[in-house]
Length: 366
Image (tube, rainbow, N blue to C red; front, side, top):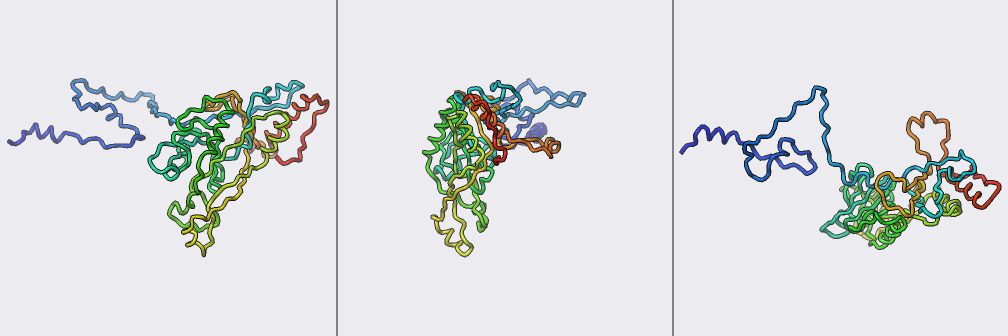
């Protein structure tokens, strides 16, 4: 029997199934409310969309924040003052700095980030399992890459400013290790755990040259890492006495740090074929890491995401905005670390009962 005209009209008016979109895509408001149970909607129809208000202001879209955004514990700048009398408490340095704080120095120059590992089904150290995410927005800084870290690990890191040349990823703190939450532990234990667990990791061979990994020629003057390959913990110090700060930690913060890094040797052009066939062309070389300043952590504090007063930052150089740079172009901004040194020296002199406060040699290198 031929279909009636009413059946033909109902058949031609049917709609095609909606296209499949990615999970990160924003769903269409017309399809987001559709039932998925397969039953008919019935008589209850969806209400029409409200017309925009006369003011012309549209309702802002609600986006789900990134789960890794603002998870790093970010230190507050240590506010110091030399305009005071004999009251040393008013200088800005914590009154219990010798007993209640832990120092981290030298803090390297680089980009703060989170290192997050995930579970993989491939060979450890070969299959990409580590993603670096930005501190503020939590977005990936680069593609995932292999690492010796265990799955479900989250580290507070600093990506070295010259990571393509040295392959260094600095490990500042630890939030989670193999699904075990470490954030509720006190500062000295977290740093001890960090150093102990990193020392137990297997050493992986350096990756192929960045140009090789991208399918290009690797015949250039210097080997370039396609991704960070060496995990370097930032040194911490539980001895924060005034004398140790003055004579050891402050000079240590001023000087660049030297670490040993293993990378592939760069072959000469006539030995390119031999180089590609050999797996033993590795070299261990010293690299210098530029210092950015000194961090102070409350010893009994837990890990607190976001900007926290539980950590104080003493930079090696003064940070200033572009406007301040224009207004103070002819004024030399003093290093906060130098101010910190003078205040520590003054406290130490008062503690020892000295009648004259020793002066700082202003001719020293910052």
